[in-house]
Length: 169
Image (cartoon, rainbow, N blue to C red):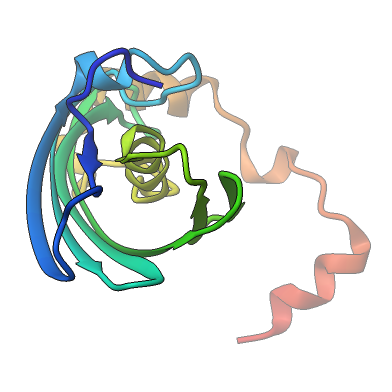
C-alpha cells in the first residue's frame, strides 16, 4: 500500500449522503506495486461515495491513457482505457476484504484505502490484446522480419480432432 494519504477517504464524521472525490494516478503510483503492468500511465478516478448508516457504496469511474507495447510489432502504443466499478463497504467487528466488490471495515478503521482498488481496477481495464488499430501504423521493419522468419501455414500441423472445425462457416 501507499505510504501517503493521497489515495484514501476519511469517513469518520462524514454526513450520510453522496460525496464526490477525484484522484489522479500516474507511473509513480503504479511503480509502488511490484507486479504492475503499467509503466507509463495517466489516469483520473472519479469517486462517488454514498454514506449510509450501516454501509457505504462506492462508484469508481476511471479514464486514462496507458503506454504499452504493440503485441504485433513491439512498437510503442498509447491506448485509452475506461471502466466503471462498484464496491460496497460494510462496517463490522474486524476489517477484511470478503470479495472484490465487498469490503468490511473494523471499528479501528477511519479511512477507506483506495490504493489497491485503483491498482486492480486499472489493470482490469487493460485490453487483452494491445495492437495498433491499423497494421500500417505498426513498425513495418518488425513486421517484415516476422514474416521472413515466421512459420508458413503448411508448416503448422493441425490436430486432427480440430480439423473438422475448418469446414464450419
